[in-house]
Length: 265
Ligand code: ADP
Image 1 (cartoon, rainbow, N blue to C red):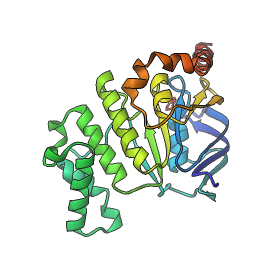
Image 2 (cartoon, helix red, strand yellow):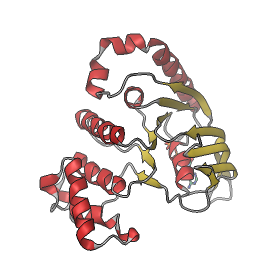
Image 3 (cartoon, protein in one colour):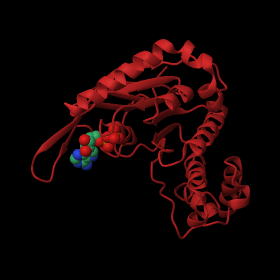
């Protein structure tokens, strides 16, 4: 089949204010297929966000190609939904209004938009919070609103950049399970950036490890064959998990340690 996202030999160099250059990533080849949940892990600053930005069309690689369902990407990737680490909710709008905003460019009639936004807020467990403003919601609840805002447009590709980063471990786990539940019903191509290797293994079909920059590359690409549906809590607690995945776990740990060591050099 055709890849939802195909990064082919991507180099990305930033031009700095002082006239210098910084090559963030080099020679990245990565294909993500429809229905595939791919995690990207690696040390801070290795270029994970940069790769997502390239897939989103927010930046153009210095060389290499970005293909979206077999077509070269030009400008913004309109087939993708993006979820940032910091939620981008409008503080002057309620949860309901924030989710409805996502439908505005599509010209969905008001009544239908209202109904669909309520449905989505229900699906993410916020039925009774629709009229709250962002500052009246917890971090986890704001993430739920952001999830609903992304998913209501039904994008074919989901790009998620450390979406649960600032949350506590327990809330992270709950959000991970919510994401798994929503994603399992209607599998999309999902690129998920996380610094949590265990979370990556628990959630994904594949874990891609990047080395530290400059000129970061992909140093490992592992297939995870755990049965679905999965529950992160079970997986984390399951003693067999580390046994079964001892090899993958050990190799990934080594790769991640190597990647970090490169960053210190
Ligand atoms: P990660 O998401 O893995 O933490 P990023 O993709 O955010 O890393 O950044 C990769 C590298 O590129 C970092 O060293 C960062 O400082 C650099 N970088 C990112 N964006 C820019 C930019 N606009 N200008 C210059 N350097 C940048």
